[in-house]
Amino acid sequence: MTKEHYEKYARLAECVPDKVTEGLYEHPYESNIYNLTYLYGVDRHLNNIPLKRFDRKFPIVQRLVRQAKRTPHGGLSLDNNVCILKHILIFRVLGVEPPVGAVIC
Image (tube, rainbow, N blue to C red; front, side, top):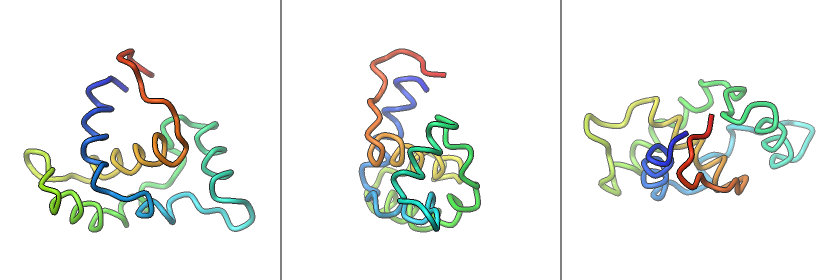
């Protein structure tokens, strides 16, 4: 992730509350934050969360971004939706420190 990528999705994610991410990483037998921490430990990009869970949140995220007048040129795509939600999970819910300018792979 580059600094530009981080800044783009930080700006888009500002208008989406953390509560929207509920249901993305729940586990029936463990605490949700513990499960999310585990998923992040296994894959820093959270590719282990099924895309269909992110896709279900698309209408909500799209509406919130549009209402805040932050829709990117060409509209909000499913890719943007996933990046916004992953940004919220990683940087706001888990509290991972954002990049300082270095490329994170």
